[in-house]
Image 1 (cartoon, one colour):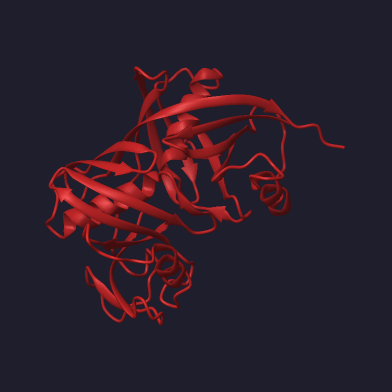
Image 2 (cartoon, helix red, strand yellow):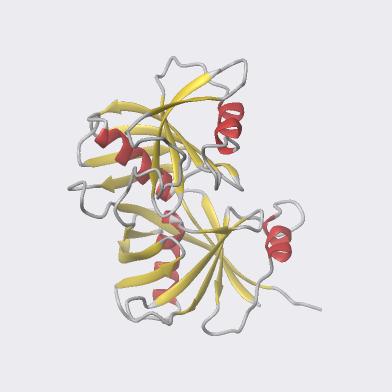
Length: 283
């Protein structure tokens, strides 16, 4: 099996071309390959397939490193768009992918000064509707207080956001003392998130710049997360704290998020890097 390792701002992926080669993946093997000590290591595995939907150029199956399926992956969409262009699987600049989280489109733009390739992706319209996120709530509202049951942070205020996958956005200040791992673990296992959740801690610097830390379900803290960046901006804009265009600084670098109107798709632009190509020989 041939594969390619890619990343967007350190959010790394194992990309598998299921068009040119016939591959069937099992969760146990995905967990093995995702192990950074005994396998290849990645945040997500991206399996490109032929689409049976006329609205999509390809189907994209996404797996977290724990072997479980994921519905959406923003940075992964950027990387596979570049991949299918470079592999000549498509000659189009804009490519549509069918995912479990819905249809997403990505446009390959240009090479940047660091040798990467910038790609812009439309990731759908963010939602705060509890049943869609999903989040258990008696009535819809923007922000909720939930009880975590840990000594350091007994309760916390969150904004649940659906991006094809679930997110819990937490606003923090620079002086805020938070045990990020403990709080994210408590949120991800909370009964009000039946499918678990990706957790974003957001520090708003000004109306066009935020700082972000992301803890992905089934992965842990990552250097960057595309849908997490979009969820953070969506929550901040709905709360009236940022404008329509925002730079999101993460551990791996900075991405641009644009949400022109709340009833329109949100978009993500970042640089993608092709790290190496490899081949796995199965017994």
